Image 1 (tube, rainbow, N blue to C red):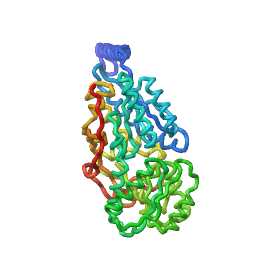
Image 2 (spheres, helix red, strand yellow):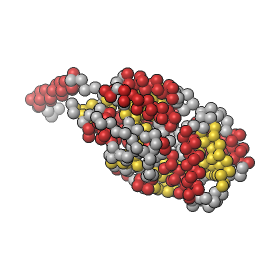
Image 3 (cartoon, one colour):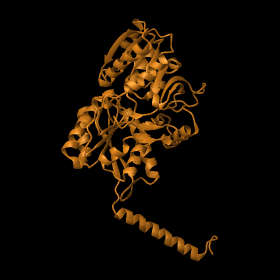
Image 4 (cartoon, rainbow, N blue to C red):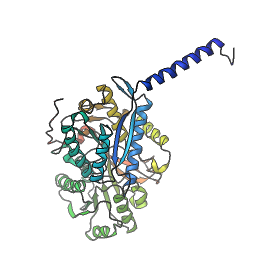
Amino acid sequence: MKNGISVRAMRWLRSAASACVAVSMTAQAAGLPPVKLALIEGMSGPFANAGAMVERNLRFGVERVNARGGVKLADGAHPLELVVLDGKGSSEASLVQLRAAIDGKIGFVMQGNSSAVAAALVAAIDKQNAREPDRRVLFLNYSADDPALTNDACSFWHFRFDAHAGMRMDALADALKDDRAVKKVYLLNQDYSFGHDVSREAQRALKEKRPDIAIAGDEFHPVGRVKDFAPYIAKIRANGADAVITGNWGNDLALLVKAAREQGLDTKFYTFYGNSLGAPAALGEPGVKRVIAVADWHPNVGGAASDAYYRAFRARYPAAADDYLLARMPLMIEMLAAAMTRAKSADPLAVARALEGMKYDGEGFHPMTVRADDHQVIQPLYVIEMDKAGAQGVALDNEGSGYGFRTLLSVPADKTAQPTTCRMPRPAR
């Protein structure tokens, strides 16, 4: 007997341990390789911080799937592997990286921080899959919000896990409908497809829900090239706008709200991404109860399941600056893994068919459904208001800034859905 364990028991334990090692080595020898997922995103340049944030969120999802044993395919369990490729925020560089992913036999590509890049990738993937059906690619979109991508420009090979611009704008307009202090709005957006979508959708939604609101200005600026938004803030002030509606994201949003703070602009910002990277810290005290955003999830949604998920993310990324969780991104990985397991295959066609119509409970706090007609994910949306951490409804702040968001309006998943004009051709095999 040694430390309460018999010699016979110790021999059995050694034998069992040897057997486990043998099984592990056999599995490796059997060649159960990882299923590779390519992230093509701007990892350098003006929006590199947004690219790094995406990588953290996706890696969190990949690690959780792998901790449970990976995806269960017909030949056994395979881990997922995230392969990060720098698309530099441009369509040209992203298409080069798409070719690298295809040459590397990666069948799943993820991107989202530009609708223009997403459109280019969808077009290229459609051609690739028609030309080489034995090297097909499935595109998973977590943020590119141009409505056309799940309407007239829809593709069987594209799935969107974010609400599109029209869905987000309708939620914001529902909140604006009750803000009777707003009489004039200024539309300021990035000068590319998504920014124009936001402007168009804002005008549509305001006409439907607040026809009394006047549009004081409708302006576009170069993406990622404006270093000082002071001239734009001066125009907003001069036009007497009570509120600004903007779809800006990344540094273009952070610099915009920073300029508003520095110039003391006394107006509200109705934003798509006012709770995004760096924005609350950049705006600071003047943003309290003045910055409104729309999100598919935020840390103060509440509920045990949501709180536990956020705590797990913070445990993985404990630095305050890295705490920006976009739940739809790791949950997208979970849905992809569930589709692979359902199909018992990592073939992009089989996985696409398994995703169509899939219902997922979102870890018990965020229900998601993939609409088969257009591959648009339907999920809840929240209109949220910035305030100091510790204020009512703001238990948690963003990125250690001391500022967070409370829920003003909760829109159930079924109420966020919009009609689609998608008429996608489906592959026969």
